[in-house]
Length: 133
Image (cartoon, rainbow, N blue to C red; front, side, top):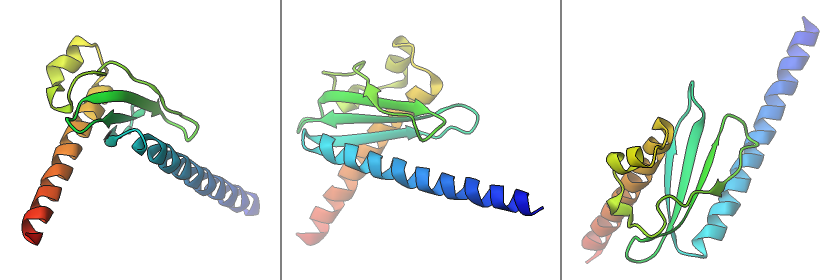
């Protein structure tokens, strides 16, 4: 019984340390991307399928300058170039466009999530500006 408890503590500790490492790595990556422009972040949680995170670097007109994607089930997954939407505006993205590009369901969810999250952010900023004026 003591070995089981010791193994559980070791696994829990490793999971915590690796999760912290992944979070720190992600934050540093976002900070680097923000030097290039604003960043729209989309995600699709994976319960049975691998989770997906998509980052779009956008300019002042919401034109996608660069995209990156991270897919995987482990903390060792990393970002890779995702150039499918470069040159389009964030507001041109749609489920039909994702289907045309043969994206997976998780990828489509993450792309549309980036669009929705950015729209929510812009609305929140507009309300803050209205409230302060």
